[in-house]
Image 1: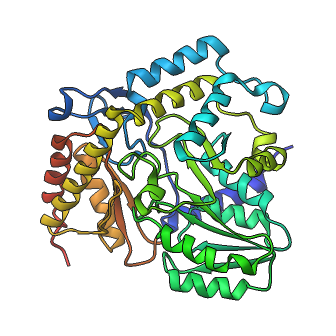
Image 2: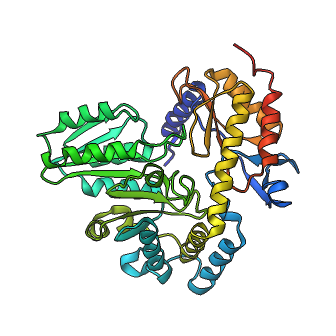
Image 3: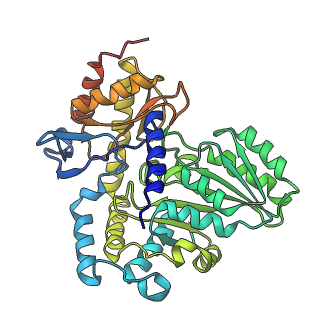
Length: 414
């Protein structure tokens, strides 16, 4: 049976997105990765894109903050795990899909974060949804930062809590007002925030949030539970890569993070008390009904963790943080506005939609890939270029980007 009318309706929807400027458009196809050359004084990795011949592009839009996916020991671990256990897990874990690398990785992640237990999922998005939904009852209130990631927003929608309150971004005083509002209306509160906010590079004031949660805890029969998604923080923030918790000296009740950003592999996880993990293994839909990451990926993540916890990993983090400061200061010296912060997400605030798109084109024409965020994706006046620094970048790479930005014709436009 033809579905011509549905096709027409879907085409109209996509056309509206394109007219509004919110369509994602065609994806860049990476044909090859050119490895780093010459060490820190040389050149970092480049990529070749379909349709651009042999032109090498510098990626300033990757979440691979430590360059782990290109490290030989990480690649070798994945290959070895695949040879031992096969290319895929074969089933969900409670049927036949648990392999020794899954169990070892969960133990290693729990130890890394100083928790009793950890639990793997296919992605951090799946982790957030599969943590939030089972923990919400009709007697639960969710309190959430207004700039939280889409996975948290959708998790809340799917969970349908009895009460929901949104507080202004990183505004602890407004958070306190929202906790007052839900007091007496719920047995349990999930206070949910990103650790690092991926569009801005700033992080939650976790110490103040945790202190506030503890102050309100006695008002709720089943606690105020602090849930943090630190997918952009773990492996990129803090002297040893333990993310927002390390940067703030505070600790969440449930910590969600990813293996697919700084650790360079794939998958997500939650780490917390053993009893919570036991509950989630019995109730989390995307754990029970979805395959886990492959055994090879788990082996690769174990190797990446080993690097991160070694002196070499701490050197990578120090280099990453120094490069971030160098790039941020270079932007300021050129007269650009940035949102200052410690994280390698460095937002260059353009504050105009057409100029943002023009700058993305200018960068691409000069072999640099960066993400532009323009209206209506962000509010008018908040348009930006989101740069992402990585540990396998070099000072020369960063200086190359600064030179291209210095030459942009729109730099001094009003």
